[in-house]
Amino acid sequence: MEISNQEIIGKIGESKAISTLTEMGFKFCRADEINTVGQSLMSNTTLSEFDCPNLYLLSYLCLQYFHCHVTAQPCLNSSPQFFSFNLKGGTPASLGNYRNMENKGFRYDCANKMSNVAILNKCGDKCKIKVCPIKSYLTIDHYISIFPGLNRMLSTEDGIKGLNRQIEDFEQTMGRESEAKKCYNYLDTNHDIVDFFGYLGSKKKYDKHLRSHPGRIDLFGYKDEKYYCLEVKTNSSQLSPWQVIRLNWMKEQGFASAIIRINLKYPNKEQLFELYKSSTMEELIGILKPALSIEEFELSDYPIFHDIIPSTADVKFYNCRWLSLELDIKAIYDKRRNQDA
Image (cartoon, rainbow, N blue to C red; front, side, top):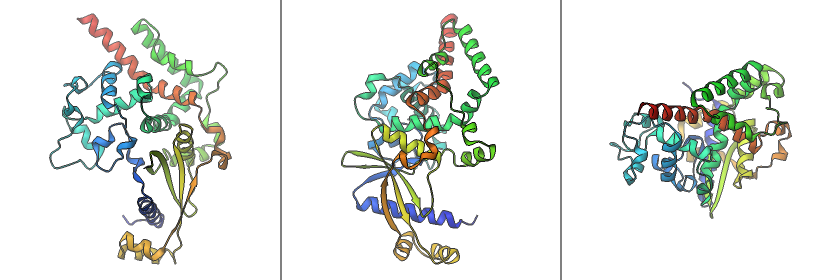
């Protein structure tokens, strides 16, 4: 499949951004490839400064709050081998490989549930020992990933009835208040669920924004003990609503959010394509000489998206309402196991 002109421009922009950041003394990694805690154990190309500083604590709490589907239950193993891969042939090319590791090493199943522990803040004050940018990023990343589906359910009468029936079923089985019901404590009594579909005004606009979903951030950066979330935009490219939500959230959590603007001029599409085919990326940048500027993210520059910026309570509620399903299932599993004992 032939690469598009827009893809070429994007590749040039990102390459220029990365080379400039390197010259400026930044350490960095691709943020759009990070899905869980423990990424610094999964790949040599991730940024350890952005990872969780206490993975073993998360593994212990994971076993406490989530039902473990791994037969060997590696969370019970305090050995350093739990956090090593020892893979034959080196690091796998994609996260999909981690799902096939059987009971060895840092399984993707474990990493995903450990991430959920952090997102739900089940480690409480223990997680506040050291700044944890990956916790903040995964919290907003999970919110955005589930928002379209859960929002549509919460914005309709039938959807709300269905979720309430789910809560009732869990409570009847457990004989106590479900974790799902507790999630509503995050919302004020007068709080309305933001109807994203209604806000956009038409299905056509909704579908347009959904095409840019989940709108992940390009890069994480680290320099002089400061953490950066960086989005690269070339020429007229603009932030999607999801990227605005992400950058604003990270800024509110105390991390630097910025847009790297690349201004790229080229003769025409045909010549750009020929240059791309016949030149290395370094040569291409040398020929086209794209200009770069770094712009601090300011929410005030994006007034059109102000109404869909989630509050801290919104993010906590949506994440809790989605992930509480697993917590309630764990409680039911434990109850039945104790009854059978």
